[in-house]
Length: 362
Ligand SMILES: NC(=O)c1ccc[n+]([C@@H]2O[C@H](COP(=O)([O-])OP(=O)(O)OC[C@H]3O[C@@H](n4cnc5c(N)ncnc54)[C@H](O)[C@@H]3O)[C@@H](O)[C@H]2O)c1
Image 1 (cartoon, helix red, strand yellow):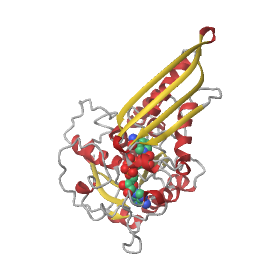
Image 2 (cartoon, protein in one colour; image 1 turned 180 degrees about the vertical axis):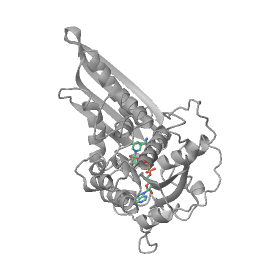
Image 3 (cartoon, protein in one colour; image 1 turned 120 degrees about the horizontal axis):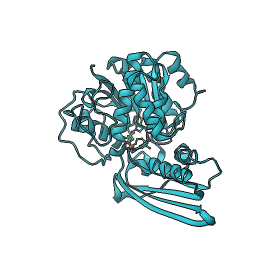
Image 4 (cartoon, protein in one colour; image 1 turned 60 degrees about the vertical axis):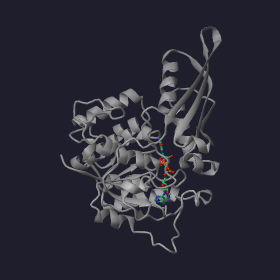
């Protein structure tokens, strides 16, 4: 079916896992079961079809390096699960910093100085690279930055994937989301859901409680980790949308008011890319008797969503091939924490299969 030319904004841990994953599964066969991918053959596209053609960064230690080397530059700490990557021939470009780097993250992210290095014109670079789709992996709290990159994708006439909790694709009134629809370009978002992370686990449990007639009195989900995602999210002001995204993903599973505390809870540097999540669910069962569940989940944070993104990228390419503009609802509901339509996860998966088969428009 041909290549899928992928551009990335923010070559942090998630992008490192994505780039590694494509190389790791380069020989995957259609009938193979790959953990973390919906299908190896996704509408005729395979993981090996993804080619990384442009990368934008704020980190001076990554800028100018080949992607194959830049994914290991500090402060990235993603687990190395793929063999050494061949050079891509693509060098990391200085992207406009905007609000991507919070004041407390300037040193950790080795932010370059815009007086010394001139940021590139993102839309121009996307056109030069002949990209099909841009994936935004900016840090949480990048309200302006996310919109800048999304607009650049729109101006370049390509697809867009918003992996971060800024509500662009999910907001039908957002002018950029509308722009994708008007220009006939597909987009998906917002805030990528992991293969099996805190959100999907908490959601499925809440759905199970609901189906089994248990009434939840309250629930919390506390998450800790030691990567820059968690370091960045120490500032409560930056993570408002993350809390909304993660909280709504759970509260939307029940029809009553549910007291919650859900979100990133602390930065524990020595955990690196290991994320630990604690979920407690307090419910009332028959006879109004208490039923308490306490759960701990420990995962490698960044690789946990890399397979999901490989599927989303392929869905966007199908959208481009078919000329479907605007938010792709099936893949957004299945793969993102804050989609436009929050539906049952298993129903969403069936809808993605219908989309692949061409039985569902979006
Ligand atoms: N499983 C997951 O890890 C997961 C799940 C859902 C959402 N996300 C979100 O995905 C995003 C990326 O996560 P991550 O773990 O890779 O974070 P990270 O901190 O490792 O990477 C962010 C990268 O963005 C770069 N950056 C900052 N400002 C920039 C700019 N203006 N232009 C270009 N690059 C810029 C930083 O230098 C850094 O390399 C975060 O918002 C995170 O919350 C991750």
